[in-house]
Picture (cartoon, one colour):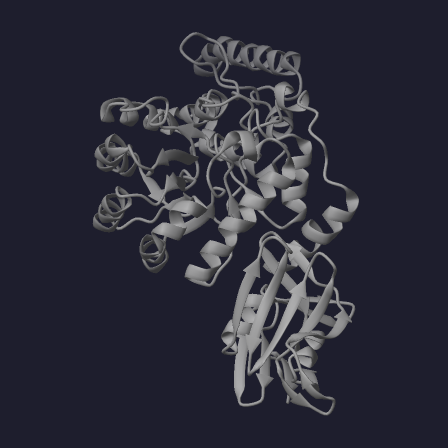
Length: 483
């Protein structure tokens, strides 16, 4: 009875097992491998497919970050979003400002993923001051010294000539000095490139005489927009200069007496940009700019900006050529003028060895960039060489020539007729008594580059009574010896 009583139960259990086996087989292979349902009964899904992440940024590293972070990577971090908007909507203070970089997707992908610390690009602001030096420049320097920051000053040649002590102050305090032409006269500067060039070279020589260095940085008065055509840009580049406009205009020269509050407001238009070149002025009549300067510095510092000086390593910012400048149809310099002025000028900024001149018991040194080497010949600036060797040079504008008095001898370097002429003093010679007048004449490749006379070194030494003895080059220097 006991056994018979369990048979119905056993039959029920066997039937149940058969039913479960049938259900298992009906489910097919892979049952139980699908996604687990969430509270709504729907499966979870990855926010991005593998192929979408890879093609979006074209960066395998981004794929791994997306995999680890899941849905958190679906939206950019607020900081990254602000950076993109700042680059795309950066205010342009003049038409056609170039050199605003695009933010690459590959840079954004790391920030979006949230899996790596945010890589913040350093933010830089370059304070630039035009039209000085003037009576307010010392006040600007005091503020910069107190704030422990450096700036770039684009100076006028005529101002620099009358205030050399301020140029020395700029130089000694570590600020950068750029060329802003000689007198800021638009009608002269933009009547043709040769007029612009003359003022650039005039100012360059003034600054070289004060600091011993030639500035490569140039800023056109009023900016390049509406003033430079393609020829201006091309010739300045060929000559070795870096022309620099700005990205933000403080508006301090919009009219006389612009209030400091307005200057501060307009100067802060660059906040949010990764790089700002701010236009200010330290010429006469810009006292309000001085008042605004501390607050401008404070606000940029608070926004995390560093302060720097412009040089050739900074990305060049120039305005595009305007249609009005293209329509001016100014006469272009002839090829001969370009060959004589533009081509050799680039060598002034080339790196290289110094040239040491050993003449008798005297010695002079020309740094790399202060002399030229052409077809095995040295070309040197007449005034610099003669004055460093103890002589004197005077300039005759009417004849475009320089008169040299050195070691008891006199000669004339004539750029117009391309020749040296020795001047004989009155006295008694083999032919008896002679009057003062012209002596030996020798053709020479004498050039007037800007306002500087350049002469071939060998002919200069020989015409001055110092024939060449030896010339050589070592790892450290070039050296020329003469009697």
